[in-house]
Image 1 (tube, rainbow, N blue to C red):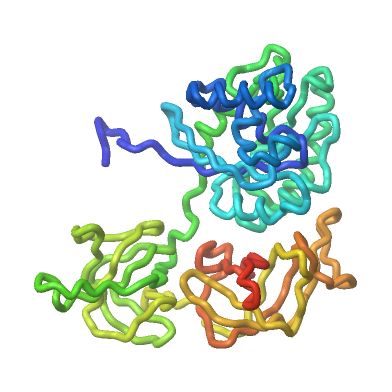
Image 2: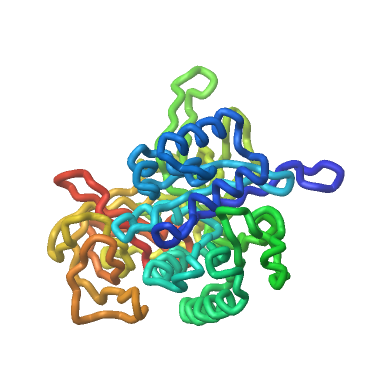
Length: 422
């Protein structure tokens, strides 16, 4: 919808923060919200009261996002904290993720839906293992935009030389990981330098402030756009006089565009039909695109159930029982080959056995380790699985919805890993 030639709706940017412990992730978000006037009065009172209770002499804006009692007592982030705010230019959803190695799984969770990753580096410490780990995870999750914030510049006397050295080291990492778009900002989250307003202490830096950059950065929007995919979540049968014969297949479009009259194939049966209508909240749509939650009805009566997928006739995904994928292992118990796990890929569920570990990623060197194949918590590895029945999927780079899955321990029902199909 447009108004005076301009879009009526502001664009939404989802971004995640990452970095090592005490790099200032929560402080950056708190400062961003504070300086952009996005903190309510009662929230401000709560931050002040929490700071006094913890004996903090200065205003501690990290308390805005460190919501758990354990986090506030330790001064660290444990869980993923989500925050929403908006400026006249854009709307934002922020996932503030923890820095400890043992909470890497939370970083994966926060980054899984992000368009942009904001990775903080302590100017005193430079590029650390967690910097490499989080950059690699962002690359693995196909996040194509990264902003590296070199924080705590006040503690290195606002040195341009320190910033340049860290930027050069990060540039080598960006090249190695083939990250399409990387930006670098020197700042002090604690005092607000280059967060919302330009810093007089960093007058040698001529780039954008952090807020200006996230407001204006152009996000690549070609993800999941070319291959029509519709995983079925449930069947709608109203059983009313007005809709006596209606049968709709409800779900969220995972890729591409669907229109009434399109010729489609239903997986796994490979039965073909045409789209009769696309409906949502009593309205019939002329088309639906990736991200839309709709109900699709077909011209033919086909046995379709939860976990099936509707795709374009000429664009069938891979159908196989043998799958190669990269996984991040979440569980304290090590992964075991030959053991059965449940996988969930979209609305489809099936059992699988881990056939082999191809290699474990050495985060320090970004090299493939084929000697130590014991996969423990927070390890990232390439594995091969065999599923109990044929499943249909795309590569993660092609479609990050139909190309991702989670692993569940059938005994405990714990989510033990997230996987990205190669």
